[in-house]
Image 1 (cartoon, each protein chain N blue to C red):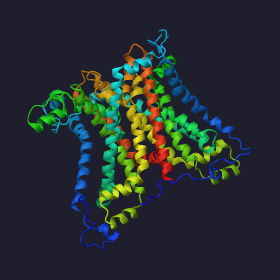
Image 2 (image 1 turned 180 degrees about the vertical axis):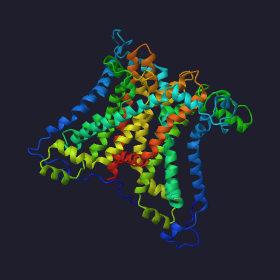
Image 3 (image 1 turned 30 degrees about the vertical axis):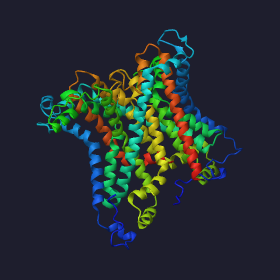
Image 4 (image 1 turned 135 degrees about the vertical axis):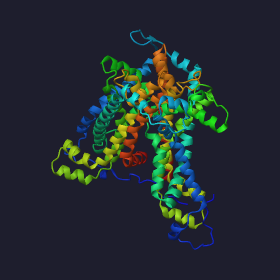
Length: 294
Length: 322
């Protein structure tokens, strides 16, 4: 390793000094390597940006690595208008928001009984709910397809909402149960002394106190649902009901699709995710960590 | 070297645990709160599981057709089905691309970002780089797949082919996704690595913050190399996170669907089938939903077994620690 600046002549180097010592060549190499790695990761996005604003003729006559000769929004316009992107965007927003809200309510109710109520067999109950997260979606899709077909929910956003409320609340139940299991006893006693019922305690004490975790869960439920593919693909079959990933996938499958439309569509489909990422970056980072080590 | 326990263990006696003080002490009332959750999980998860398991012992064309009892037919056929066996073989490569490479690479990137970039060049650069590595994680896999299939287009249309032609000076026209099993599976694996890498990077970097910097400084004073410190301090300290990453990504690998569906659709010649895609395809295009149900049931069993093994191993490791 090149980063062994330890045995240098100035041996009586204290830890405090250590922080101000000059950067070594090895450290610069590490920095450059991590930057190169990040560029590799970012490269596909760069390609999208370079090509999304080319006109079809410009795209056909140039290399994908060239800058566009003129700024064209033709591809974006086609995707926006002809493929009805706003409709898909609304479907995705509606489905993901509903799932985030309802799944959090279900998670809180389950976790209240498990973590605060400490009902008998709670370890098993957590496992039962976790099954929803573990089971492969192809195991669910045919029976649920037939079920939703019978009750007329196919191509209706609620088929996807109901399904993912269950799948997402599995993780929520797990996380909140372990949080509520260590809920400060004093607070609960104070609530009981004031004569609050269980329901009242849950609503006015436990939920407000666990608000930060609940917010993290909502952000995650939203983005997980937004990104889902297999079950929405199975349940949403009319062009009016498609979500953003489904719309793009369908466009990709059509032979006559113009490449610039596809590239522009991909770029537009990414933008909501990026905006979401920028807004919730802190919450996301906090959440990934909270999920990893409870 | 003694390592301090990595996590606070919940060493509380039942008396200290949360519980709203009861009159009479019954927990019966709490069961009411399960009603919505239990109904939903019953209908959406358990009913389909039971139904598919039952169906795996029948032949059924679907729709209004009659089911006919098949006994173990479907299950026996499963073990002689080359496509099924091949699809599980591919899972090994998927595990390499979704678990092994991202975890190892993630360890290196996280350590480099945290130890070197973060400490010596500033936290701003390291969190910016971390965000870049994480970006593919939040993209819908379908969108990432469409982007890659554009880059990997065959002939001279493809971005990658044009790029390679530009570098080599000769005309490169590789049919990456449809040409051969090697390039198709390789492409799927590259997409998976690209998507997965950010997850271990973020988790491991957060884990590294937990490690006491004085441990490092002591080791540094003792003349330990960067690599020696990594091995003796970092790795043991963040083992719980390595475990969590391995568990969650292995299960995700067993269930993988969208990258294969979008990039190769199982081709060329069904060579890139993964179990999930095979089951989906049989349910939609097959003639016997009983057989499709058997495939799906087999995957479900494998997922559960793997999860149980992982958790057992973890529990044993924790007990050894304690």
